[in-house]
Image (cartoon, rainbow, N blue to C red; front, side):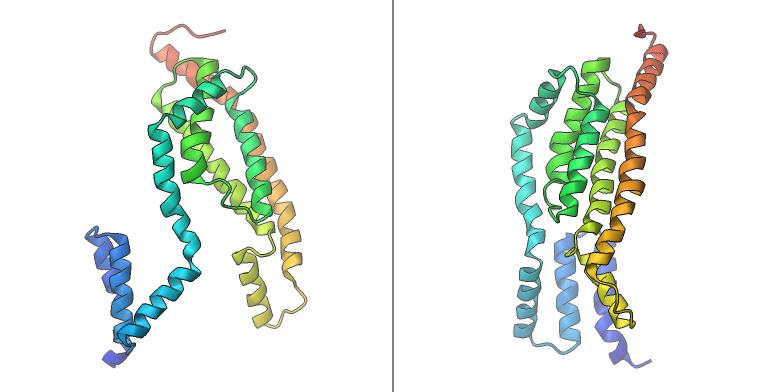
Length: 240
């Protein structure tokens, strides 16, 4: 086989080797991109221009670079503890109710295209999960680690499922536009992004909202059973 055909694929083994040896991902991807560009005959100036263009087009990804240090700073000043204390002071708050409210808001915002209002790094870890744990602690007392992990998993799942099914309703969402372009390329021209968004509504309501709400309705009772089982195993008094 002609080596000139394989040479542009040089970036693939570089990425594989770089990740295998646990090098910095950004460095690995940059080196792979430079190697691939030089292999196909791009001059260095054009290569830098291409890198800059792609970075500008994807600058929204840099939002996380700004968010993570801010969240870390807030956590160092007790953000999680304040969220737990605030929720613990609300007698009517339960883990399931907090997650239900967040799920609905997250899905509605996702349907409006506001997917960055929330997320694992900026909302779930520093705010939602501590609030859910705080509500459970106020109701059941001290919680073992496996129950805390279960509550954190439910918090992360709420965010993922809500935004996954909610953003499909937004007409300018990338996946919707991709489906629309694919259909038109294959001669199906009577389908518009509006139709795709409308057909995503039943999925978002039935497959996501209704089913997940049913799971969350059972969560508080499940946590109560888990806490009682843990207390019995530890020889502690179980609440009636």
